[in-house]
Image (cartoon, rainbow, N blue to C red; front, side, top):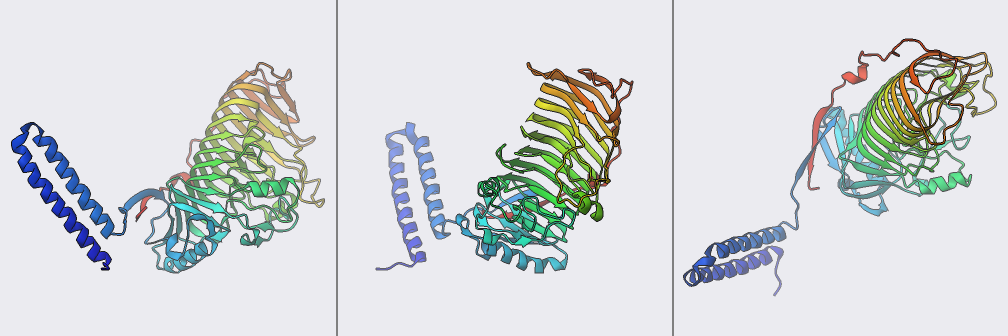
Amino acid sequence: MEFSRKSLVIYLHAICTSLLFQFFFSFLFLVFLERSHVIETLISAIFLLGLSSSSVAELAAGHATTSTTIEFPALNCRKHSAVLTDFGGVGDGKTSNTEAFKAAIANLSQLAADGGGVQLVVPPGKWLTGSFNLTSHFTLFIHKDAVILGTQDESEWPHLPVLPSYGRGRDAPTGRFSSLIFGTNLTDVVITGNNGTIDGQGAYWWKKFKEEKLNVTRPYLIEIMYSNQVQISNLTLVNSPSWNVHPIYSSDIIIQHLTILAPVDSPNTDGIDPDSCTNTKIEDSFVVSGDDCIAVKSGWDQYGIKFNMPTKNLVIRRFTCISPDSATIALGSEMSGGIEDVRAEDITAINTESGVRIKTAVGRGAYVKDIYVRRMTLNTMKYVFWMTGSYGSHPDPGFDPKALPVIKGINYRDIVADNVTYSARLDGIENDPFTDICISNVNIKLTTKPKELQWNCTNIQGVTNQVTPEPCNLLPEKEIDCPFPEDRLPIDNVKLKICSISGNF
């Protein structure tokens, strides 16, 4: 005899019910035999009844799971929502999902036109993919048990032209691979999750870089260009082929609650690189990297000078870095569009080469000015303060040797450092000194084998107050508290909404 699924469920339910009735009548008989076990036996009967009923219900529902709702902060909530599996996504870590991502975003972008916005949920699983492009009024939500895996199939990484403010690729003169998650000319785009993961599987790319086998510049994990109202938050990013997060030519950007991890010997795995961006906030994030944890940029030599788009109005707060061979926060070296009004506070660095490092060179032009840093806690550092005017890599021989950068208005205060090798290396440019430097309330404790010359200073001008060890003669003592602005930048006035997704996760 053959049973339909419905008939089978009814049949099993009848058997369970019959057995339970037999158990119940046996229970009544036992009451008269052993009254002391009445309560225990009753509890067992109730448990078995519930277990049998729930088992039958699960069979009838085809092993359905309970729908859950996850709340998260975002720039805007969305009217329409879909899951990657709705478009053929397969989360086995082996099947390519590049076309599924593209189809999902293409379909959802049509719905975004009604003004309600759209969101795509990446559910639990391992989702192998090549590069894909985002759309406006869009949220990409990555579930905590989901991993987006960057494919090692180079055919799934389209080529892009070089960035106009750079003039060439960083790894090769011509072209660059599109980032894993890419967007251009967007408004209101959110990349977030409840600590979902993006894994670039960078070892493949690092090996090619070290063996000098790259003809095209390596991809980044996330790059957003020519866009505004951008949020990247509540994610773990690991093993990027190169830079992790690269907003460029964009404005009104919130980056928060990121964990970024890469081996400390991995090449050029910068954490967060705001590049020719205005009104950016980076906060509550943790980076372990093979390069600068944050690198503030604005173009390279004559190309950046011509493009002329600075990075300005940048807030960095509650940020932690581990990078033994690089900086916690680097300003430059590609700064030829200018960098101004950077405010960093409550910064922690451990086993890192330097705190805040200014990197520039003859030929860069432009400026780094109005930089404010306070409340840094540093442990096991090579340098606390580092500025260099001879960071001499150039895109090509066409740079202008008369294009001298202006470095001024650099303010550091309230810094504690322990186990330090050098207090400071501050090297300006001959006939182009770095000026208006202010350092106050700094206590540096040295390693057991410190360098004899603790402050190495050339071509600089400024003042210090209450700094230990004693600074160089070019930074004389003056009774002053170095400034830190107390006004709020526009990005701090942006309030996130509480949004949600629902589904069987």
